[in-house]
Length: 612
Image (cartoon, rainbow, N blue to C red; front, side, top):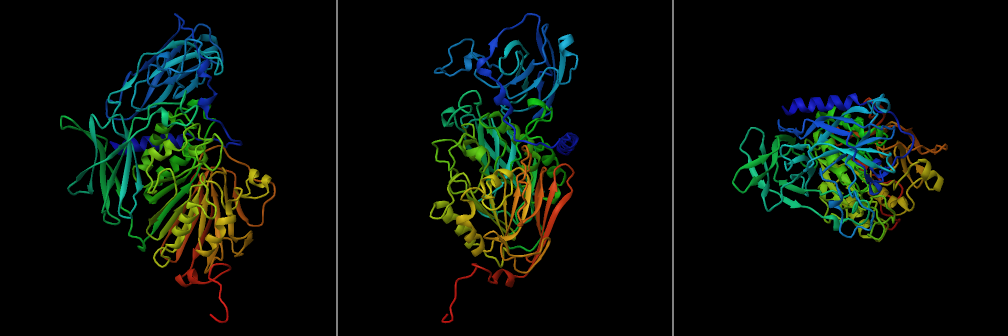
């Protein structure tokens, strides 16, 4: 059954052919002035949704048909999907400063224009839409508005639609634990600890299973740092559970399922999944890693304004699902779902990546759209997180960080050592994070883990994206000034970034100078670090500067992701694939021996004298 559902999901994704974007978008839900909405219910208008009861077959995603009519139609009429179904003034905060009743204080979780698939709507006043719903712990209602997005008037509300078990455990996402032989699984449900115990049932495929308890976290509106997250974008996050599967045997296949033990002793389970345990650090075997940033989410039903936001996201997701048997671990390096303070979007993102994140570790990094908010300790005092100030990212996904607020961590996968930085906190010399980065790089055993990879959201290395070029730095300001000596000293092979929504690869470089003139087939000592921008995961694309620096080997203004394959301790293949077709558009290889890593290059070994 799960295989059939997965096949159908992939088919829908692949069928969603998305066009290239040319500019950065805005969160579609932010375009709705819901606080200005007026109630103007019309007795000859209606909205009817079917089916009204979803998930009877145990599924947590389903299509519904929305039929509607309004006698005074306009081209700006739209259907909003609200959850919970009661979105009236009764849900407003007591201290809400708006004083003009009636009040609507909740943004919809998605919307679509009434004439989207109804070209004669303006003439007939009747139409229908096919919309896709996921289980989000509450019921739904569908509302017809006239007056456009800026002056909405509510003219009709539908019947209530709900999943059979809205509290069900949903959308598991795996992540590496704090040791190489530990896998974590995080999921979301409507069960609080006072009504059920969260558990993970797991074990080797075909053998007896263990049931382990899981931890539970949640947060309330007071944890948000500002609007819209604390106002119209707020939605109860439910309960977020994390279970730990420990002392795993390397490379073996485990099955697991997440669920809850009710007070009467019965269990509520999700479906059964499987994963392959991580290899022992230094193990000589083929290991495959995928990295990208800035993917965001998109809607299978083309809602939220005609797919005009993050339109490459579904293509990237579909490519990863279709090639999942050839992927061991995924790194999504910041700007995760672009909820920007509209919390419902996190559920929709976890549902979108569930086929990936339930099968392989899905590791994330913090980006500006997760963390930044004035006066909250972020390095940048902007409002990019929409008031989330890191809370959603820190809770919805597990990372093996010592402190979730300080989103930097290291993780090992076989022959790889990954050092993940948090660019939304200060990384410069003398800071706590700088000390972490140096320790992470310095502690890598290069004889066992020859492939040393640095990951971060903002471009701390090199990019010829137009806005970096305009600043004249070709980097995040102050980005590499402190770190490049660490990359060079500890011989970092590859650094990968997001933030700039395109793909670019540099030569091996140190202090703006290429240290190796080869472009595709590197042998022996690199002499510097290869810097890669892989920010084309799905958000609207960014342009390059008209000037192409001599260190820029390959540039592509398209959606895509990168894949690294370590064949052994001496051979690595790097590929850049476009999300539209999954084909390789750029690649290089590194071939070397351990002595090449030990060899000195500029500033990579301690200074010596004739006396020494």
